[in-house]
Image (cartoon, rainbow, N blue to C red; front, side, top):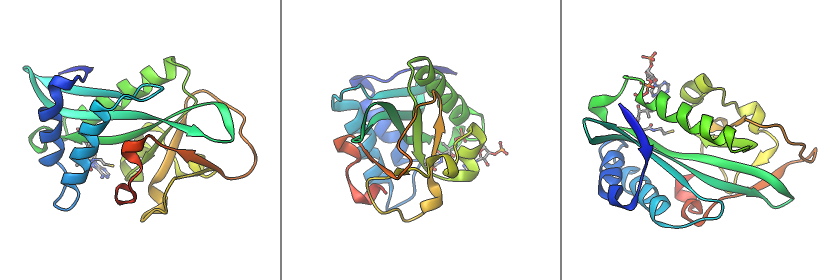
Length: 176
Ligand SMILES: CC(C)(COP(=O)(O)OP(=O)(O)OC[C@H]1O[C@@H](n2cnc3c(N)ncnc32)[C@H](O)[C@@H]1OP(=O)(O)O)[C@@H](O)C(=O)NCCC(=O)NCCS
């Protein structure tokens, strides 16, 4: 299995990963998000990786930047979406994509990586709801316990709830 940066040429494969991975009702919006994150330039840059086996794309992960309006020095990212094609699940591909991304972001000096997902899965990688407590997500969450983060490089933040701002592609309440 090989992990590499995704490019515009991977658009339809990335779309397919999420269309065949997420359940009815979520697959359209998640695959559109994955494509938008690949297409739309952001500052700092959005990072998308694909996992390939024998030249075929079987998994995808994206990390896009988040800001704290109250702290310009804060460098954060959010992990979304992540998908591994059903036939390839449970072979640690998701684990490798997450660990690869976190290692890269840590080396870049990123302070915090957020995720909104199943704590039973993301808890394995050190994400925790407790660590995310000071950070207010951009929309009201259907599953507040799914809001988690991992601190990669410590930073002092104010001792009160701070709002995070996402890239435009994630500014859709249906995704939260
Ligand atoms: C979640 C997902 C990315 C995991 O990818 P994967 O390559 O199968 O993951 P890994 O092989 O690294 O890890 C598999 C383990 O995670 C567990 N797991 C997968 N999804 C889980 C979940 N939602 N909650 C808890 N555990 C989960 C598996 O049961 C397996 O456990 P085991 O190691 O004890 O056998 C993949 O199942 C997927 O694409 N699911 C549908 C889309 C999705 O839910 N994406 C995440 C959105 S938050």
